[in-house]
Structures are given as structure tokens and as C-alpha cells.
Image (cartoon, rainbow, N blue to C red; front, side):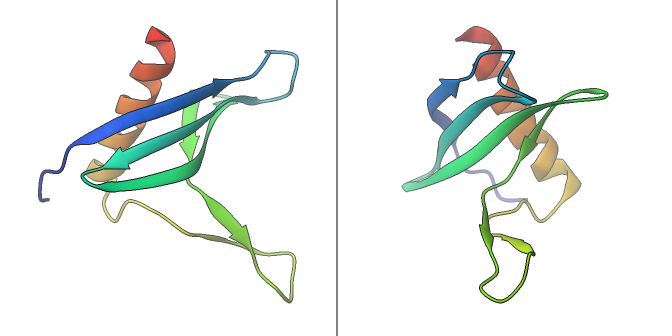
Length: 87
């Protein structure tokens, strides 16, 4: 995997009584900004949902950004969760 700098630009925290979504997160990877990540409280702790968009002709949603490897997903989740815990 090629190394690019990943930064958390903004964290929009939500109240714990607002459901399972704990925060909306915007990140940058190198010179690119990506909005729309969700930090969600699941059965086994926090996890990151990547940005999605609805399909035009169905109830499906499609990822508009996704890590291609497990290692990349773990790195991204750890960066976002660490930033959330420090904010």
C-alpha cells in the first residue's frame, strides 16, 4: 500500500441520545478532501461508515469512497477513532 497522509479535518459530534451515530467526519488524503464519513456505535464498539449515495432507481446505496484493503480500512478507522477520542 502506498503511504499518503490522512488527516481528520472536522468532527461533528452528536449527542449520545441521537441514535447510534456518534459523529460525522471529514478527512483529507493528501490534497483531496472527502466528506461524509460516519462514526457509529456498534455492538462491538466504534466503527467507520464510508460516504454513500443513494441509487436513483432503487433503495440501494453505493459507497462513493472505500478502502481497497483490510489494512487500509483499519488504518483509516484508527485515525478517525483516535481523533474522535481526542476531540
